[in-house]
Image (cartoon, rainbow, N blue to C red; front, top):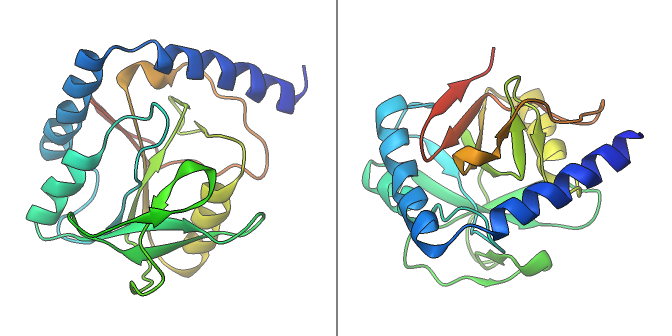
Length: 191
C-alpha cells in the first residue's frame, strides 16, 4: 500500500470514529483538555499560543483557549494563505469576531496583528506514540512547523480526543513530528 493510500485509509477510519462521538462525550472531552493542560503543562505559561477554531467534529478547544488567556497567554488563530504555503497567525482573544476562512474555518480579520507563536495547538485525526500526526492532508501545519523550527524554538502540541492516539501513523519525509500530544485524558511528550 502506498503512503497516500495508507493515510487516506486511516483518515477515513479516524473521521468515522470521531463523527460517532455523542454530544456528552464531546463536552466532557473539551473540559478534560483544560484539566490535562493544567496538570501536565506541555509548555510554559504565559507565552504566545496559536490555537485553532474547531471545524467539523474536531475536539472543542475553546474552553482551553479561554483558560490559557486567563493564565496570561497571548493567543492567535491560524489563517490559510494559500495552497502550498505555511500558515499565518493573527492575534485573537475570546470575544473577538471571526470571519470565514477556507475549508470551513473561522479566522481573525486582516486588521489583527500577525505574530509568531511559541507554542502551537495543532488539530489532528490521529497521533502515534512517536509524535507522528495525521491531519487532513493539506500539509499546512507540517510546512508551518518546519518553517518555525528553522527560526526559533517552538512546542508543537497535537490536540485531540484520547481515542485519536493510535499505535502507528503512516508518515513521509515532509511530515513533522509533534513535541506533545494533549488529550482529554493525558499528555505525552515525544523525545
